[in-house]
Structure formats: structure tokens, C-alpha cells
Image 1 (tube, each protein chain N blue to C red):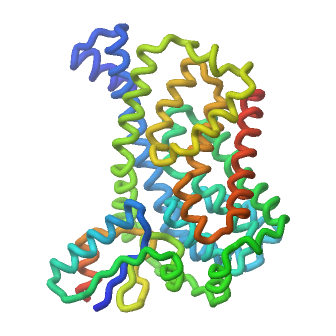
Image 2 (image 1 turned 90 degrees about the horizontal axis):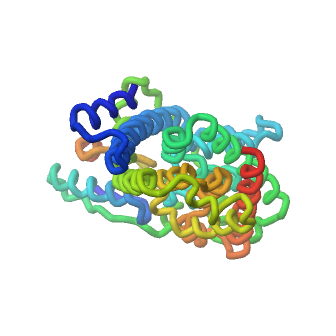
Image 3 (image 1 turned 45 degrees about the vertical axis):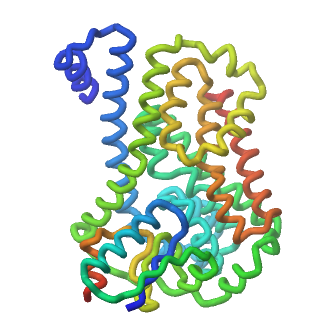
Length: 77
Length: 319
């Protein structure tokens, strides 16, 4: 699984990245987590609110910071 | 009701002496913290709910549909007010709107109002200055975004948007996916987002209230009138310039400003200052710099800054 966290330096973007890493660790999956901060790359995904979560090139979350529990449910599926 | 609870808590339960400066300052701090905490929780939940039902993708579709017949600027500005603002979303929103085929001027209307009228500022304004001032602030903010976006739209500034933005904007915008959840299903995530916002800003608000309480307790009434009175013609532009670097602490600054108003700073000057703190944010400018050429960015911020100064003078005359 290929997970990307889209977002710049704002606090909720950092929160989302931290929670995603925690969720991946909890599920014990071998997914790769990458933080994308470059605006041009971010805009390829047509998202309008940060932070956003992209799993295998599908936009799953925009403008929200789900809890670790919600993230494990999302990533575990 | 909250006030009598604070009275009871401070003067009866804790036994602090009423009418003594430091005890009154403590009372002010406790009462304001409860009131503002309550308002912050209510307003962030409300805005979160509006946003859950009206995601920005749907707003974009609606504005781009061409059904608004000339009210696009007002609608974009109004949505800017109810959409939670984060400086990191300003570029995605800017490009996303252009991508959806929305004209630059309408996009700027949204972009001007979005930081200016946001949930945190509104909650703090209600708590500190009351409903009337909040209403004046919100309506002025929305009208400012409407007219400035319209005026800037007339200037053909499209050529000052960076090329890569237009390249992306030419691609097809995706349709909003209609996920139909009930209010009950949405509530937990709306609530956790709202509480996240409140905890994020809590330290700033508490620090601001503490400083405000100190000013209330110790600075004599009318102290600032001699320095920042309506007779001092430079007070408004000066406070707008001072406000620009303060964005990071916007939520902490409002309580301090309220205390200054209580001690004689004119309300118009204070409102102009607050509008500049939230509306002219340096972090936002740094982000937008990647998508806008300097000329567009300078025109955009210059127009907002000058208008805020004008509004400050106007409010000092009429309020």
C-alpha cells in the first residue's frame, strides 16, 4: 500500500502525518508513508482543503484529521 | 448566568475580596475564559456542521454553474466566511476554483473573506465585544470581499498568475462526490475537528485573556485616549501595519485588544487592527507567492490593506 499525506507546514497537516504513521504501525502493514509538501504535486490530486490523505492514488480524506482509530479502519480495509 | 457562577466561584467559594484590583482581574479572567470557551465550542461545531453539508467542492460547482446571475462575488465571499480557514489551504482553494472555471475576481472574493471572517474570530468577537459589533464585523468583512474581488476582477490580473497554475487549471475538475450521511453519523467527526481547533488555539486565548485581565485590573480607564484617540490621524494605518506580523497569535491578540478598547482605544481602530491581523497574514502571503506573481500578490494585499484602513476611519466616525 502506498500512502501519501498531502499538506504543507500547518499544524493539522503534521497531526495527520503523525496519526497515519501511528495507524500504519498499529496495523503492522508494510505500507509506505510519504509526506508531499510540494504544491504542484499536491495539486495533481485536485484537492481543495488541506490536509489530504491519498491511498494508492485515491483521495480518501480532505480537510480533516481523522483519529488514529478511524485511520486504522480506513487503512486496514 | 455564567457571570453569577463566576461571582460565586471567585468571591464566595475561593473567598477572594471583591473590589480589590487583583481579585477583580482574577474574576475577569475566569469569567471570560468560561464564556469564550463555551462560545468557541458552539461556533466551531456550527461551522463544522455547515461545512460537512456544504463541502467546498459543492460550493465550487454551484458558483461555476452560472446560475447565480451576477451574485457570484457575494456568494463566494459568503462561503469564504463559513469555510474554516487554514493558510495551508489557500493555494489549493485558489487553484481549485480557477480549475472549476470560476473567474479570478470571484476566486479573490472567496480568498479575501475566508481568513477575515472565520469561526474562531467570530466566537471571540461575540464573547468580547457582543453581538452588534460581531455582526458589523462579519457583514463588513463579507462586503469587503465582495467588492474588492469584483474590482480586482476588472483589472485583468490573470496574466500575473503563475503559468503552472493555468496548466493545472486546464485539466478537468472532478465532480463532488455526494456522500449522504445523516447528522448523527457526521457528529463525531465534526465534533472532534471542532475540539481540535479549540485545543489548538486554547493556549493563545488563555495567554491573551491573562494579559487582558491584567490591563483591566491595573491600567487606568481612558489611559490610551491620549495616545490613540480619534484625534490622532495616524492611529488607524499604524495599527494596520503593526497587525501584519501578528497572524500566528490572532486568537491571543483579540482579548488584549478588547482590554485596550475598554481603556480608551477607539473601536474603529481596534476593528481595523483585528481585520489586518487575520486578513493580511504573512504565512498566507508566503503560500500564495508560489501561485501568484509579485504584482498580483501586491495588488491583492495592497487593496485589502488600504480598504481596512478606510474602514477603520469609517468605524471611528460612525460607531
